[in-house]
Amino acid sequence: MLQGTLSRLKNISNISAPIIVCNEEHRFLVADQLQEIGLDNAQIILEPAARDTAPAIAVATIYAQEKMTEDSLILVLAADHEIKDIVAFEQAIKQASQSAIDGNILTFGIVPDSAHTGYGYIKTHNNDSSSILDVSNFVEKPDAETVQGYLDSGEYYWNSGMFLFKATKMIAELEQHQPELFLACQKAVFHSEVDLDFVRLESNAFYDAPTISIDYAVMERSSQIKLVTLAAGWSDVGCWNSLWGISDKDSNNNVCVGDVITKDCTNSYIRSSQKLITTLGVDNLVIVETKDALLIADRSKVQGIKDIVVTLKSQDRYEIKHHRHVYRPWGYYDSIDSGSRFQVKRIVVKPGAKLSVQMHHHRAEHWIIVKGMAKVTCGTTTKLVYENESTYIPVGEIHALENPGKINLELIEVQSGAYLGEDDIVRFEDRYGRLEKIVTTTSIAEA
Image (cartoon, rainbow, N blue to C red):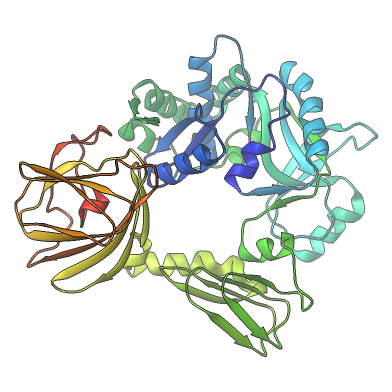
């Protein structure tokens, strides 16, 4: 969906390289997604913590204004939207651009096609033939009876969360309505550091920014908000039920992804990442199996997954902080199994990539090459290890792993030792500039 969001902009004239704002934990995943579609010039800004949409938009706008020689137009898009009519989307951006140049902040209002209670609404008060309307007020997700009245009036549009404005205009609005937020974000950008292809915001400054949405921070306070109407097959895929709604369905109205067998099953979304899922005689369910967990929910109740996350956090569950599948600048790893004195991981290293030169005080490692060729340094010896071969890294030995080949290197790593904690690592050399960082790792794969 991130790739789709960026790819649908390809016909927009005079558009610059995108700025992506994401959490630090997602940085390598985002970088890989961009690389897959040939976007090598994108700038990725890393948030040290989630602070909602207003700080995210603020840092991107401040960063763009600092880097551009002219007063840029900023188009804000979410990564989880589906838009089917790209031509209508392009036309809406074109219509909004002149109004933004004139000093207005444009929001894209979706022409509603149902009494949806999961979206926010925007009321307009000059609903004529014009595609650019004055905004009266914003409304949070209303109940079903209220929504039907909105649709009957013809004055309300779904709040898409997409915006277009001049950088200087948004900066002025932030300074006026959210001075504390603006100063925190400005400081976070001015004292940011470049790390590989990423911009790391200054953490302490960004933590000072209040957690607030752009709607509350600016849109509901400014007097220069305009709405561009958009009827383009838009969907905010904010939950599994939304994904069911936009996906192709079988004859029983099911969406099945992965290894799925159904019998007498209707109106359900079933997604398998690894295991076979079989269903019998069920209706209106969401079933999602991942490497980390299994979700089973009534389709009408999936918005309540937020409550499940709150419960997981309150119980300090391992799953809320850690994932089996983790991306790194050199590739990724998948945690397969673990016990009191062992851990097993599947490691994939991209061509030309190299893990850091390091050592462990308390564990040994066995590497079994299953695909490709590895260049292994162990102590003072460097050698090539091929498919169906293995090598052993003793406790306390300085070592490194590199992929000198043209295809992905895949190996199984087996750790063994009395202590397999996350702090048992010492780095000596790293081409990705991570020597100064505190390493939280359980294997070379995580380093």
